[in-house]
Length: 141
Image 1 (cartoon, rainbow, N blue to C red):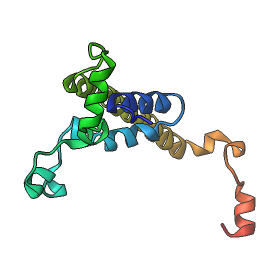
Image 2: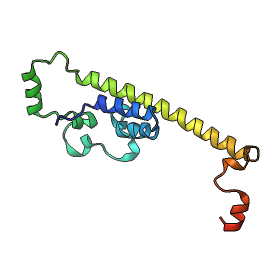
Image 3: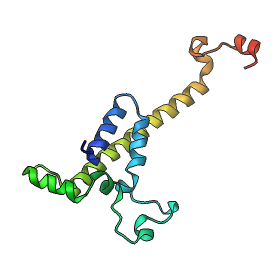
Image 4: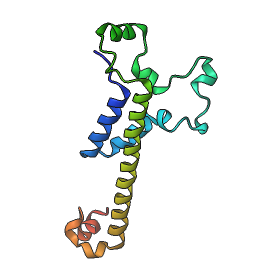
């Protein structure tokens, strides 16, 4: 089974997050952080500094840049439709940045709901709560 390209994974994670799982946007951001935003200095040395060989990043790992796969791609004769590494990285950046914007918007909306509810909880009525105050006094929770 062929591995999925990085841009396809980033795009799928964005759309799944769009259709109801916004936490997946955060996973998308964390998964492709090095590729899109670069390595953070607080997380230690990069692989290029310690291993002595050139760092390929997540894209190199996910692309499966083995000689056999390159030979298979050339044998198909369909190399005109195969995107270059730069095009794949551009697509990954596009979808991860969209995930970043979406996760910030969802976080702001969630935080504003929490603040609104906490400041106006008397106005919402007892049906908004899981347990009424009488039940809380009786159970001790």
